[in-house]
Image 1 (cartoon, rainbow, N blue to C red):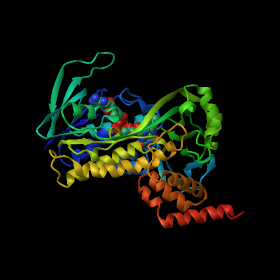
Image 2: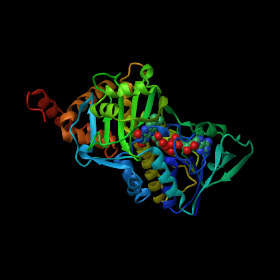
Image 3: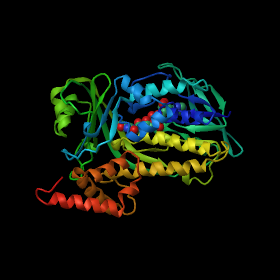
Image 4: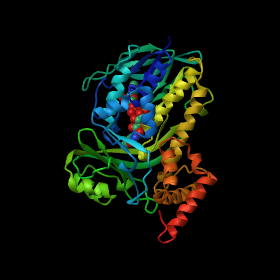
Length: 446
Ligand SMILES: Cc1cc2nc3c(=O)[nH]c(=O)nc-3n(C[C@H](O)[C@H](O)[C@H](O)COP(=O)(O)OP(=O)(O)OC[C@H]3O[C@@H](n4cnc5c(N)ncnc54)[C@H](O)[C@@H]3O)c2cc1C
């Protein structure tokens, strides 16, 4: 049994721990936040924002923690399917997709269950500490340098100790300093794609009654007619609450002002207005700013040390407008499990693993950056063929308002069940053309 150290005990770290355990290795999770700390914790400043767990993410989560969805539902989470999930383009409701499912749950409850289930394993332990650097020997990572992290406001200890490991998994999220640590000890940092997006999120809770029977999730997608328009989502979550998020860029970023939040909800699709008018806001509006998206291209590093894996937001963190972050992290865990199952040497550079992760990262990046790139203040980098891709995504968005087949394919890609390439086939574009022609013919739409 080998020993793997996972840095970061959030969604990606916990999923990686499960994946490694599934292959029979012992795991130590290093996490500065006290284990069991729920709610919006310091290490995960975005955790107070609405977090949708996509269908594919739920499937993966039930794979790593069998019965997890059922446990969440027993704790008050809400499962929506088909017409209980309302998608809107420019406040117009899109055609429903039967069989599409989403679970309404707060990030805090989800993480709480995932943590408890992961730590119930006798071969997984947690060290409450902060990783501050790497130990290396020969061509591989041999451990991690740690400093004790006490409960706030107790200052962090300056004393360091080294935890030895056969392999190290970086799951430290957006703020991971792994690249700097590697260069400190003579290794290469990965090339990075960075996109300045200047994005603002604001989430508020509302007391939920019977104002929207049959609605579990509403999602107002990025507009194809007005790139400055607010986007957002709302979901029925545990505690008989609605959780609603408003998303906008640059000087339109939402603030903590509750009255402004309600005003903006009224300008959005119908369910947002209903909740704004009928429901009492609970607590305060919480905001979060995301200055830039990035993807760290570990697969392009020429000199990669052995015994190193990177998962979750530490690899790539992008506009979560389609809610793909946690699902990506869970898919990275699948890549890790597949890599280990194929008999990979833990001490060797994990090239096969990073090649698989590249596919997951690029799929989410391609989908999530399209709306960002349409913003006047965003300066790229624009992918090759961007103008055509933008035009095609506008046509697809229009067609998916009325054509269930087109909408289903689009949701399959958003849900990471299919690759973006599936939206570029002649068959797909034939269906888009038919849908647009039907919309143009009076009385023939739908
Ligand atoms: C505003 C917003 C909304 C989002 N909405 C969605 C959504 O709807 N659906 C979705 O799927 N995703 C969403 N995401 C993305 C989602 O939050 C992340 O993709 C997901 O949390 C990835 O988890 P992670 O474990 O990689 O990183 P994080 O959750 O950020 O966790 C990183 C962990 O590393 C620990 N850590 C940091 N430094 C150290 C250190 N030096 N040593 C040890 N540990 C350390 C931290 O304490 C923390 O526990 C959203 C993100 C944002 C910003």
